[in-house]
Length: 216
Image 1 (cartoon, one colour):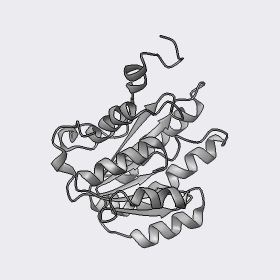
Image 2 (cartoon, rainbow, N blue to C red):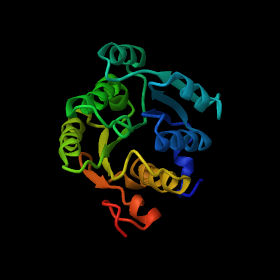
Image 3 (tube, helix red, strand yellow):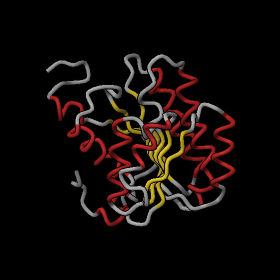
């Protein structure tokens, strides 16, 4: 699964992955642990998180939390404090189908507010996965959130990635391709890239030969 150049850059980094129950989240947690990172994986399903930790128990710590719950976010923020945090990957919005736009944003905002101090101290990088909805309402709101939080998190940086067909068709190949993009955005080779922007993940088309609408 390791294709990205210079994976030693992730060795020893403290990483948090939210939405770790999503196929992309699970794959990225395992890859980062294999690169030597210390990974904290967050999702609502405790059983799934325990199974994920079993892949590399000395490098993967799991937290079954619902970040739409303000109390859970408060607990996370108080426990993390100012401990340096180098990388954050937030996929909490990718599996949500019937929630309101506000609920979708709450999870990401709850996470970012909880670990903001750690990201600033670690001068870290955060990547937020944005669902590519049909009318653009959810992704548009989350894109605005990315811009606002990038300013608030300085000197850390925040990037958004638009992910078409985010809730389905996650083959191992697609997980690797999308994961490479996430890792590249947080790799030292892209340190000059300005934060606050939203990129588009094209792996859906690359892997399946289809465009966003399912056409060929």
